[in-house]
Image 1 (cartoon, rainbow, N blue to C red):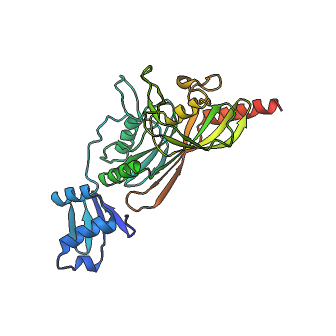
Image 2 (tube, rainbow, N blue to C red):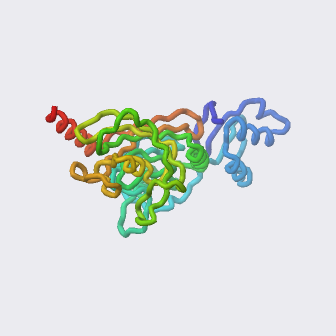
Image 3 (cartoon, rainbow, N blue to C red):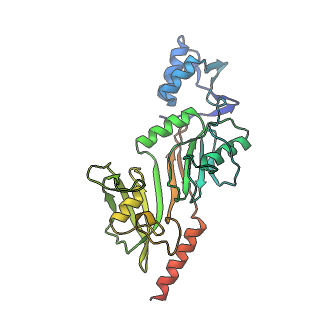
Length: 305
């Protein structure tokens, strides 16, 4: 369920015009709550909170919802140039460069994507809590989605749990991947011999990755991948297990002769807008190091023919 009508923002308020049927009802409060829940798609948890805090108010023929209250960002801000791929009052999608973590892990002086997003909000004059919806490995580049209010966070978290988001990647791997490989469906668990690694395990969590081959080079391949599940290191574990480790991924057996980080990039992120339901498709251009890697592999392959 999503809202298809017109809306506007006025400070902390979202302003809607529900129509005469609800506005002139003898039991307007009940009708309003039912309309917000069933027609507009407001998360029930948020509806209860706004009702309790008097965050649902009529002003003439307009219905105001306190969706944009000031919230502490929850993390310090560190300014750095960023690539904003999409932004509105509900969502932010930002490019994460390879080598950067999304949130702090206790290391002194680290700069994370959350720190940079906090600085972005501060620069925009917005008191918004920093809430990422999904994660990428430190050395994977690609788009990361942030929720800018409680409505967005509840809806997007639900879509993540329900596997309603599409996350598409490109990867350069060792070996010749044939077109026969289209799906990898192997469970993943922890590696008891190595704290950082994961491995294929019959008792692990189900994990499914879809594969499409785009280019084959001498000793390497460029493939497209789509996740049906989101296990830790899923792409890296699946491909390494089949004998196609990512170039640069030394943790899982890949060579770093051509690139010094795992050659994996989130090329596209697709999701339904948490308020309007509009299908949002975000493409994140390839970083320079992967463009250079492709040129190197094409050149080496051309020399051998």
